[in-house]
Amino acid sequence: MKTLTQGIILKEQNIGERDKLITALTQEKGLVKGFAKGAKNIKSQNCAGTQLFTYSRLCLIDSRSRDTYTITEAKSLEMFYGLRKNVEAMCLAQYFSELILNLLMEGEKNQDALSLLLNSLYLLSTGKRTPRLVKPCFEMRLLSICGYMPDLTMCIECGEYNREGFYFIPQNGTLHCINCTSQESLPFSVKMTLGVTTALRHIIYADDKRLFNFSLNDEGLDTLNRATEKYVSAQTDKNYKTLDFYKAIIGQ
Ligand SMILES: [Zn+2]
Image (cartoon, rainbow, N blue to C red; front, side, top):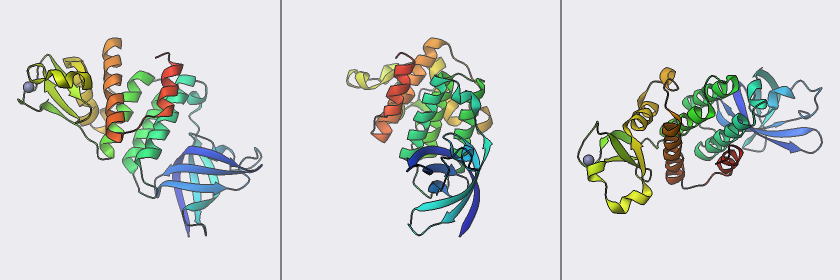
C-alpha cells in the first residue's frame, strides 16, 4: 500500500555506501521508519528530502519487514537553512528530536506534536525567537500533548492563585505557595517569581498561535529553563544526552 504524506526527518542513518534509513514524524502515520534507496547520492532526487530536519513530501510503501517503509519519493519542502548555520539552534533541534523519539509511539498520529516541532524549528531557523525562549515552550508543550500536563492554576495546598512567587514541584507538576512549602520539599523544587510562574502558565494554557508570544528577562528565562528541564527529567525519568551537549555548547 502507498501513502503520500508530509513529514520532518528526525534521524538519518547511513546504510552501506548509498542508502539511508530515516525516521520521520509524518502527518498521516506519525513516527515512521523508512528505507530510502540511493538517497546518499547527491545526484539522487531523494538526497535533499531525506536530510535531517528537512520537511518533505514523502511517498511511503509498506514493505515486507513489518515496521519499516520503503521511501520512493522524498521532495524537500522546507530545509530550515538557518538551523544549519547556527550550532546552538542545531543542538537544540537535536534535543527536540530526542524528546519526540522518546515520547511518541511509532505509527501513532500526532498532529499537535508535528505542528509544535515545525513552529519551533521555524522560529529557531529564522531567529525570530531565541533558543532560550523556544526551549521551555517546546519542552512543556510537548509533555502536555503527550499526557504529562502539570496543574499550574494555584497552590495545591491552599488554593492561592496570585502570590508573589511559587515553588514548582517537578515530580508532581504542582505549585506550592511560600506559606505551604515544606523544608523537606525545598531541594526538589524550583523557586519562581510571579513573572516566571505567569510565563509557565502561559506556555501550558495559551492557544497555539500565542504560545511563543511572551518575554522574560535573562534571570527569569534561566529559572524558567531550569524548571522545564527538571520537569522533563522527572516526568520522563530520563536524562537526555542531546540536552547535555546543548548546555555544553552554550557554556552551562
Ligand atoms: Zn498555599
